[in-house]
Amino acid sequence: MVQTIQAKDIDLRYLINNFGLQLVQDDQFFPEWQENLPEITDLDKQLLDKVKAGYFNLLNYPPLLEDVIRMAILDPLLFIGDFYLAPFYVKSEEPVDIAVEDEETLVKGRIDTLVLKDQFWVMVIESKRASFSIEAGLSQILAYMLANPHPEKPSFGMITTGGSFIFIKLVKAETPQYATSDILDMRNRGNELYSVLSILKKLSQIVISN
Image 1 (tube, helix red, strand yellow):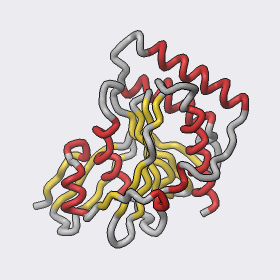
Image 2 (cartoon, rainbow, N blue to C red; image 1 turned 90 degrees about the vertical axis):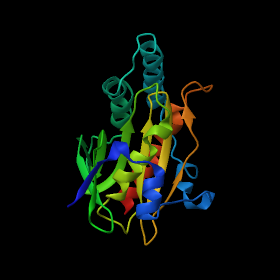
Image 3 (cartoon, helix red, strand yellow; image 1 turned 45 degrees about the horizontal axis):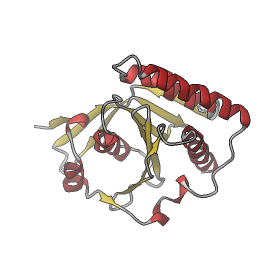
Image 4 (cartoon, rainbow, N blue to C red; image 1 turned 180 degrees about the horizontal axis):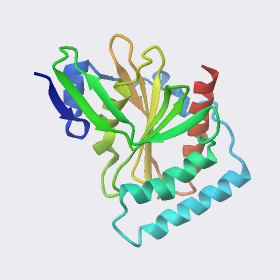
């Protein structure tokens, strides 16, 4: 009998034991979030300044839940980053199943936002409650990324609480490996959304070129 596990109920130890998942801390494994990032326009910056101002306004009216984060933070980022234009399209709440090697366990879950290009997974974006640590979503988003049907290509993800962002790269190969970016936080000086958008644009360029 096949055992079903909800993706939200698994942790990193489960992924390590059942999929051999490995964390890579070598900067050369995930240079895409730091190197040769594209410039963003003055208009982009003006729009992102409004997004940041809106975020801090929303903090005055807790709780800041997933639907509000998606509407006020994620949707503007995807719009400004041209992820609603060809060759990309966005499907929300896409169900994902992944099987453990013994085929007796199926991990089930739902992705908050999935960005696709020609049926190729470009970005998995998991929005969590603002009161949660982004670590709370790491094992869940990695479980989704392990379901990428194109193991020959790396997949990229982003977790956000609304105010904090982290990027993830996963390479499946024989032994799946992943790495994360630094945490980008809206409470830092300046506007970290500039960096978030620049990284999103860089990853979209990589996928289009593939």
